[in-house]
Image (cartoon, rainbow, N blue to C red; front, side, top):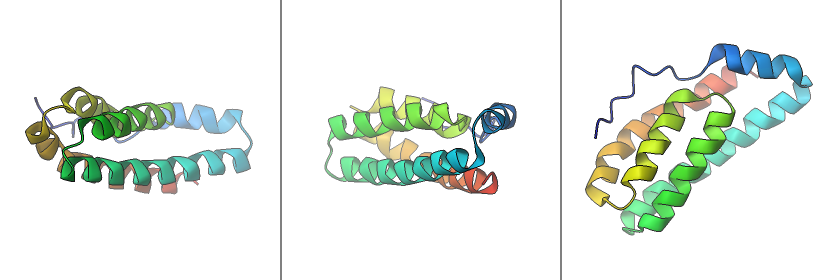
Length: 116
């Protein structure tokens, strides 16, 4: 399993711009703020799941990250979430993937904040 998703852009600028143009600015700000909170919560759940060797918790958190981040055009963390979802039963693979997800989550949050 390759954890190097650094070639995938943090976010899809055109997709997010198109969404921003189609909704009121206050709604866009709310969506991005909620996405940030959700990503932070789910990342904590991934860490807790690994600490407890709880593959179900890891799967659920990764699945949520994949979907919610993808819906707001955060391509890299969404792709990593998909990998984590697939690897959720393998604690060694989860442990290898988690640092890349931590980095991508921080970069994604910075990217979203830059769009508000």
